Length: 606
Image (cartoon, rainbow, N blue to C red; front, side):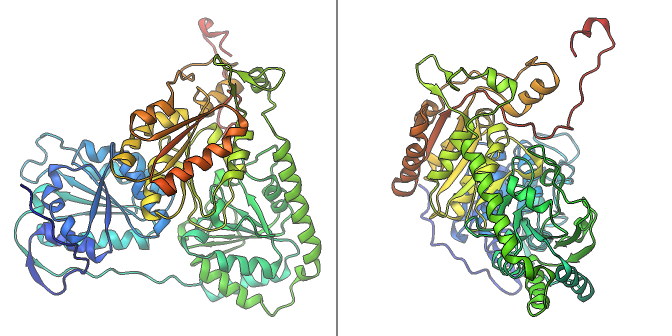
């Protein structure tokens, strides 16, 4: 018979005390405020896991460790606190590599705890032995390896401190035999660094540039979200009368209802934002590295302003001038810099003051034109997509229902979005087109796999988001290919009462890569087609709710029903939307080249 757990104790002990390394590890977690972890239980850390509950720490058991890493990522991005993932040494840890890479590109403070083979058998090729530090060296900001049981608390605390200070994942590697023994140590207190507003010379140079700008534009990036800088960004934008363009997949970095909001740049972004930034003479990239995917030509527009002066504000100095040539680089916190710049220009007469009304009208007109275009953009118009639909613009199913145009579906989903919603998007053709339609009023609301771009990201990430913010509606957008990599986590939702909504775009293909076969390989489709079962039926078999939608008028009501099930009945619901095989633009047109063949047997494969 198991013992009755004692109530959670959340205050970490103080002073030098005798304890086991497991106790030192857990008490350091308590000191860092950890109350939730993700993973699959294993013998490698079982001695520490045994005392999670009395320490007030809950381990959320997942179906697959990659999902655990994504959940920790989502939890961190919503809460602003650490996300923690742990697993069995060897395969349990190697399963996490992809999700830690995604967290790295999202700058998420995720700590992955990697128990490893015991020191007494290390190097002998024993059961589940692996070199675990090299696995993560490309995707962590710091790697701590516990070199002695007495240093357990020291390394644990450092990994948690560095995840916050370095804005990215860290790894805590612990030989499994080091959880045992007797040590004397003091639990380290969390150390948090304070970020400033940059140097006085760079601030003055930036303020002078803004004062002389006739058409300033702000690019709000992830640093605005992570630095809680939205209000400071708004104040600076309002003083300048500057349109605010969001960075790629950073649609939550400025409120969509604000008159100066222009929408996102980059792949499947806003034409309004692109046309406005193309006219800029000064761009202030606030908390943005201006990455390639967020500035590349799109919709036939090569919009990045070639002659504009660029002010880049970055908390990570290694990103300054890394991608785009800049005029002024400011190494500082987005909020502190925005407030400092506003202080320097607040009382000055600015060159752009005389044209505020004119520019406001231009912003309004460009946004209205883009909204009208989106309303009228009912389906894709390229030759392949037109071949996929009949003369009435619909693709018939065998059941007599209709496959729906993805763009119309995305517009209806946008209209039905509840307030305060959180949305994660997976990688894929329809999910990427969704970038044109996702708008938010507050930060920490949109979550993408960023530049790692892995499939299977959105759903487990949203489970972590929901645990961090249980009172907010949580929606994952997933394509049917990526859904195959993540649908098993539906069982995690059902088993542990974590209600989440997934919208699955069922178009029976690996759309993003298939688009390359259309554009470059004369529609020679290899491994791109998917013959799927009913995802709504699978959801019901797992104990969740499932809704299949094949009529446009049912899209909004289906989402609203799923959200009601989530928020009022504690139910996970999978909304399966039957979509046509039409395809949006490729991720980038310079990614491949037309094929050339020299051997006779392949001469027709061009």
